Image (tube, rainbow, N blue to C red; front, side):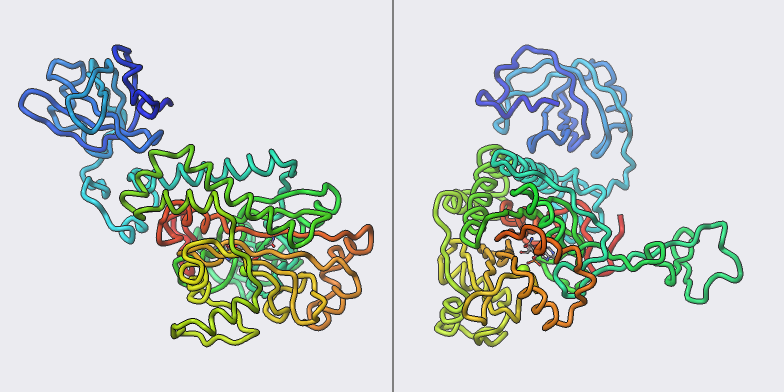
Length: 474
Ligand code: 4AD
Ligand code: MG
């Protein structure tokens, strides 16, 4: 698939060439002397405009109304200069072939459908401009992520999805359970078995082959095992949170990028997070021009300039204590009251990055230990840990990370304090027994990054098939 119109000549280089284009019909306009059909194959935002006379091979399918919006077709034609103002070139057809017709009930007609409506058609929404552009930018961000880490000597590690560990220690995990095989579905099935879709039974007494297991909330602990062997690693995969939040920035299933660096402290970690974020933002600005222009015009005016600024300028850095002072001094009433020790809510995060720092990303460090996870390294003051969050405008928290507690006794004491089961973390503690080393890492929510880069409001619209409380259709 070649996008002939994206080069500097906008397709003029191809004048006179014969091309075959395969794709889906976006619009069809039959006029008295010519017929226009716009076709899109997802390679780029703009459609290929095709013009044809009634003597084109296959024209009878247009005449009989077989070729309509949504149909898949292939066409052959010659690249000519376009009369219209929307594009430099168009295709003058010699042949049109219907591949798969589209039922008149096709639910995505030309008129602009609301995002809410399109969520109910998640299987067809990639055929729209917005969702096509989101898919391409998401892909570019994933590619740029691998490119950044690979170019900097990190090794990509696959962390498990099914796990017995709770990385965040917050209990927001989905359990894994087993379906009873069809052959065993008898009248004496366990009493706690309940019918499920596909006429299978769910057996609550059988979890992961007799052992408790969950869907991972984070690959970090596994990442640490590999960082303390390979030095710099990263994971990039799906993670799951059983938190019942219905917001525009939470999903039950989201992708996370988690670098982990050995021989690295919190400052190294902050430097890595900043360099990574600036790299991927710059990458989409340079490589997704047509889609980014689309977002700039239709979704979030000015996003290109704001992202360019972010890619070039240093991020602000403050401590949690300074952030609290800022919020207390703000001439603003927050829904959630602020005092030292409180968790920052999204309204606080947005105030800091959008108002106090005028749209600049802000790295906040040294949070109270009581609101952060057990593995974060304790600071000398005994009250705070070497944590960092990166906040960005509109989204709030995009990255959460820390220097890890590498001192065995202190980590064990922390697990005891929090009444977490030390035995369950035996292998994690081993990493502190055998060649422990200062190390740090962070997690970036990939969908929040896609929101940040595209200006899309709702996290449900930047992942192909969103999983939110109660919704796993498609
Ligand atoms: O702050 P979190 O919970 O940190 C961790 O999981 C660490 N183990 C990461 C690490 O240090 N390796 O999550 C990290 C990021 C958040 O900053 C946010 O961007 C995203 O993951 N995130 C979510 N994204 C979408 N939906 C949710 N429910 C999310 N929860 C966290
Ligand atoms: Mg966090």
